[in-house]
Image 1 (cartoon, rainbow over the protein chains, first blue to last red):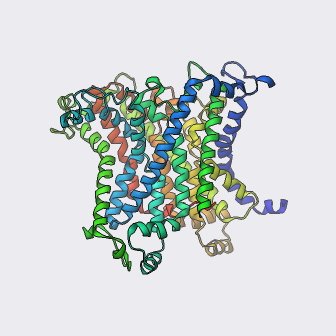
Image 2: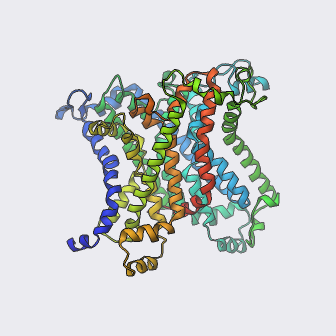
Image 3: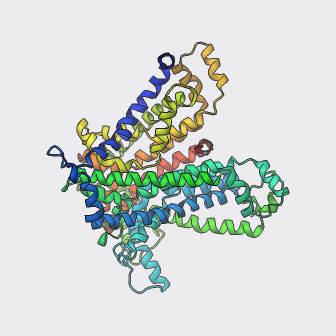
Length: 298
Length: 293
């Protein structure tokens, strides 16, 4: 074993810079979060760890005593359950449609659909599109068409805030998975289509179901992981669009709740770490669940 | 209509592609494309609107009398801060270029042995990295903040750039792509007496051009667009970046919409241009992005 390690000395040295930083900034933080989640820690004073009777105090407080947390859990799951599958299906459907275009059109369409992910900061313009005063683009458009007489308060009416964030989130969600699907579709063996046509595949939907999807399973799993991870991390966009906190916490997410406790004036790092641990577990769990189901299918 | 579709030499392709179906595809792509394009097109139009059109009610979608006033007024728009607009631009370029270069170098340096050497522990290391694809780094922002504060990196670019040097996605894509390299050419380099570092630089890197261009795109767009970590760690105004300048200007509301849109427009250009140039390489790289287990 030692001889083997010596033999591969160069390999270890080459992996070392990346792996060391990876451990420091991705692995260690997981343990730091777990560690401090059993304490009350305000950064100025050393952390006070809970004694055994109270060991899970932060977690019990979260689930039993924190109404806002329950709202953020509900919102985060709503985001994940709505934007996750819709954006996944949209990535796949659009990639599939785009793949039927001629090479030049395909390149142009890929650029168009990927552009919002590339220029994430342009989402500010949605704030002016949805603007609640009658100067908002959407409101003036709806008024002109006669759908409404009064401006709709898209960004402050609790009936719409979550919807607005979901729409903008969907707009930005044709990202890495979309590219992976386009690549996966191009990688499908052409001979399979010919064989399929001879075997009686009649239309594009049958072709998709019987030939295309089964040949790009690995991309489908990769895409699922990317979309789920993104769907659970919604926060910044909601804060920018409908405020921190949004009216009645209608679009408040777990990430935002965590930041609320970590940042000034609260500095309740122990509590924030407990929230981080919960979100970490949920995201990882959801990914493993999807992975399990996608692999059982095959 | 036909020239928009590619049927290639696929026998039977015509059988599975009805004209009505093709029309449906174009229709759906058109509607969704419109939804995707509207905010970007609106931003560009607003960026060129004169003041009168900005405050006009009801607002026009398209600019009537385009002007460069908003570009010229950028310095006024940030006048409430002591920092000139060019400083934000320079800061953004600085961290984006350093971070992207470091990200691509560290990822490909580590990906090569992970893809091609059978050293003990490589499966463990790689499965850790795949596992980390399954949660967003944002989840770890609180413990990371505690680390940065312990390192004395608050209000320093180290806190922004160093974590960006090691993105799991970059390493994952690079490693998957490197697996396709023919072992024979690596063996040939070894027989010629090249060390592993020389093999990596002179043999492997030229062979993975699509992958490193992809990593350049992903790293660049992530750092260039980052607002979360800059707003968390950087407190000195003269060290802030374009996304923060955009937020500051945006707080001016409707009267500042023109300047905000100019910044949004300027920020769109570099990542979109990079993708425009690298697109075929990116798609090539993503072909090997599949997750095997």
